[in-house]
Length: 319
Image 1: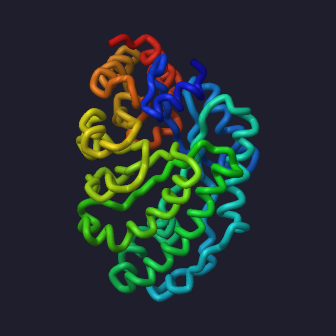
Image 2: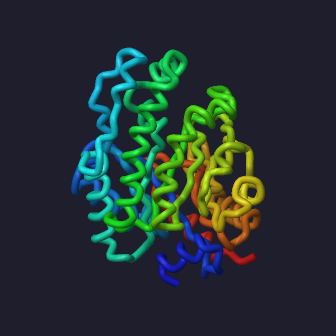
């Protein structure tokens, strides 16, 4: 079974010759720009032996076009449109990677939710303070970003050649908002990109990020429409098998299992330890509708042989 068929079967909940494996990391410096970024993605894929490519959006940012100093400044944020660098550079990156791969494997493009993009731009403390001062203004700004994100999500698939997007939501920590506050303030801007992508592909991965090390309001996120779910097993304390039942009873596939952090086994373990963990995860999750991966992005300096060990364990796995 080739890589593309293997991954598509897993995403559809169909039998596979072995469970697919996928990990990804951020890129930095020159590896975030133009053709160099394209080649960095291809080199990582080819050297790691993984089953699919998750393209990173590193180096491509939403152009807010305004300097934010006061809470009222958010009221001026407007969508940048289809021809903005945010959209065009992303689609071009996807197109170039897919042209080089020639359909060899499935590809997905990372998309951060608008709430993440406004925080990347203005800073965590600024955004949270301004939400308290001008909630409607922040929501209006996030709606503007969401409008462009919905355009981008569709074009990444229809023009960029991706099989789907990797829709990353952040900021749902239980100590940041109540579930009701999150649904009121953030959810409206979370959904447009995922909905737009779902209109043109069913192969969209929904990532519930635990980057801050604090549990999130999964009771909100689990209602978002997706067929493939990825969550922070080690932050939420929900195993793959538990998550399959709780988070994604209607989903066809779950993705993850390994701790992505530098303190985790994937980064620090021996071959024997990492492969034993892969076997444990497969024993727990089963081999249908499962992709082995991690809670989130892995460190960029992880030895690639650690990832190949997971692939080898999946190849040799027998229930």
